Amino acid sequence: MSVGGVAYRRVARPVLFRMGKGDPEVVHHRTLSALARVSRSAPALRLLGGLRRRHPSPRTVFGVDFPSAVGLAAGMDKDGVALKAWPALGFGHVEVGTVTAHPQPGNPRPRLFRLPASGAIINRMGFNNSGAQALAARLATTGRIGVPLGISLGKSKITPVDEAVGDYLTSLRAVYPFADYIAVNVSSPNTPGLRTLQDRAPLDELLAALTTEAGSLAWSLGQRRTPVPVLVKIAPDLTDQAIADLLEVCVDRGIAGLIATNTTLTRPGLAAGDAATAAEAGGLSGRPLAPRSLEVVRFVTAHCDLPVIGVGGIGTVDDGLRMLDAGASLLQLYTGFIFGGPPLVTSLNKAIAAR
Ligand SMILES: Cc1cc2nc3c(=O)[nH]c(=O)nc-3n(C[C@H](O)[C@H](O)[C@H](O)COP(=O)(O)O)c2cc1C
Image (cartoon, rainbow, N blue to C red; front, top):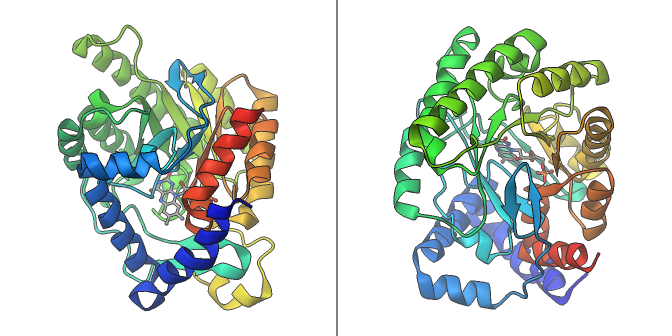
């Protein structure tokens, strides 16, 4: 592990993890507020960016140019408040959201739990976000951030599942002009009924509507010859048959790529020390998810030609390289970044560039 990695784990992380009497959501909000301040300050951004060695590994995936492979996963900066700080920390793309058509508070707290012995997190946030319109307003003032920006869309809790299409379309229309790609989130376990949108018929209806609308928006905005790529983010808890069916729909509907995977409702391979927390309801992320995410990425790349963003349990350089070997074109981090900090992003970038 790098010197920075050791310093983060031995010094910064213990301080962070004790903040707010150990409530992970307090730490999350304070860290995000600090990064939001950095994001608004050109000198702070220069300083942060200057502390880091650059290790580019440029690639073009689904028609978008990425400076490097490692991106920030959805859910960390749902409302896009700290956008410019993420590239300064080494991320080669940022996925904001998930946002919904209606602003919503999410589930009651506590709803975010650390499982330190397992290198994992359980969350049942429930898409707390300020809404697609508010995100669009913020993005209009933020401007370009220097790396591709993905925008993740979900369904508002108050919208019934059989009216989901209209809800996603409202969000798409609001944020479309600012997105380098759109992620259709049909895989969060914390919005009742959402995952049923991965089934063949509702998925087909949703993706047909979104890709058609993306085409119309591209035409009416006249900025691009091709519409912004639309990706689908899938759950790790689907059977092989369900994934195969989903891939068929995605290919038929001109989906540009897959993001695999979201969090799992299963509780594989947790350390004994985390047994009590493991009983909390919600999606599990982090190290225990890695074997299944890898498996899903392998399955997807074996069954279709669509590019895949591999996410789930990447906590070390080896994890990231394994995900690329499994066929992923890009990577994303969430939980690994909480436990490994910015040095993990740098080490991963360095190892990938060295390949
Ligand atoms: C607290 C938390 C909130 C999340 N929120 C979202 C979200 O809003 N949308 C989404 O697509 N994924 C969300 N995720 C899932 C992550 O983007 C990622 O797919 C998952 O955590 C697996 O990656 P990891 O093991 O690196 O964390 C969230 C994860 C966590 C831990």
